[in-house]
Image (cartoon, rainbow, N blue to C red; front, side):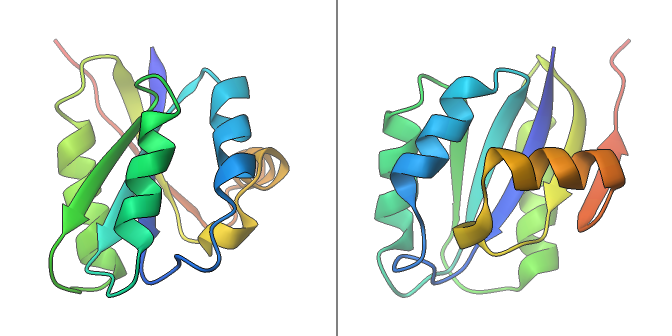
Length: 123
């Protein structure tokens, strides 16, 4: 069972540290990351797709074609993760993708800073 983690991304192509992000994902098996591209006008989507291709099914990418805001991106990511059977909790982290690393995510999860949690249970 895994924790689904939604990370909204909007026009962050020049800021994403893809290699660091991939290393974090590969070393933390308790998460399934859902990267939601919120209508970016730059190359954000292609970078997110690259990250997905390097992480052996541990990352999903959801593309929203037009910018609708962070709340909408989180809601769409949540709906997407609800369809993945192994997800038992869904959380979102509302930080700049540039600062995503294992320490930040683990600190935010343990202190609940910048983090929102939604649990769901299957019958």
